[in-house]
Amino acid sequence: MAGLRHKARVVALQALYESDSSRHEAKVCLTRLAEEQSLPESALSFAMELVEGVLKHKARIDAMIKTHAPSWPVEQLSVIDRNILRLAIFEISINNKVPLKAAINEAVELAKAFGSDSSPKFVNGVLGAVSQTHVDNR
Image (tube, rainbow, N blue to C red; front, side, top):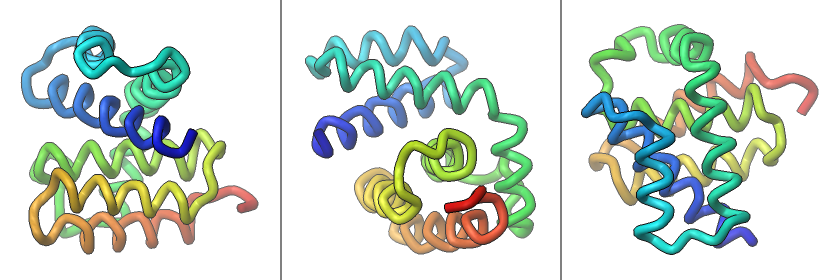
């Protein structure tokens, strides 16, 4: 199941990235990407939960990014880093269904795969700061 959850996060990230950079509807992007990549129903369900959660809580999540990365205005972050952070912050501070370390490790892996050379360190640093102040009873 861990492999499917990783694939679901990748597809969720791709949908959020496309939506953020092109203004396409994120859920439409997700459905198309899931079909293209033959994502099983259980993984699609998890990816949809992530995308819907990020969209629903985007203002709150972006405020957390702003607080914990004050030198980097959210709108000036690379689109990929911004959406990796949004996904991970949703998982660790709002959704609370994944162990903290697993969510951070997944985000760092996504940053290694899709971000710049500095992305993994940046993502890890921001999420470390977020996890110390915004995680309820973990």
